[in-house]
Length: 105
Image 1 (tube, rainbow, N blue to C red):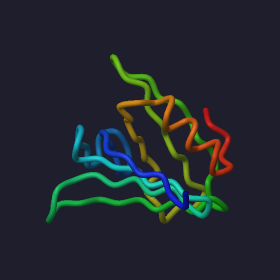
Image 2 (image 1 turned 120 degrees about the vertical axis):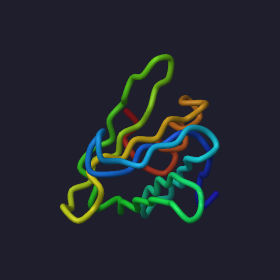
Image 3 (image 1 turned 180 degrees about the vertical axis):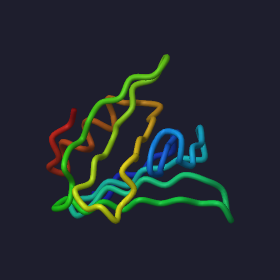
Image 4 (image 1 turned 60 degrees about the vertical axis):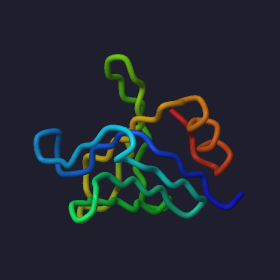
């Protein structure tokens, strides 16, 4: 398997107040060894953050009622700093992250 993809909810932007957010099925994540890509929206309003593995500061667990999410923190200032993905099946996402060499939160 070269990539892992799934649909869920997502927030992508500069902060909680300045982000594009969407619930399932308008958010998505693609995980590979090279990068994590989180996207949200519906054409023509789509926001996408592609964060290379080498430029990733941290992966953090986010809690929301009743969901558990993944926050991807980039190390580059030109990337969106507020990238959160809300999976429907968090354990499956954590397993995929480990499979691709990331330290799952």
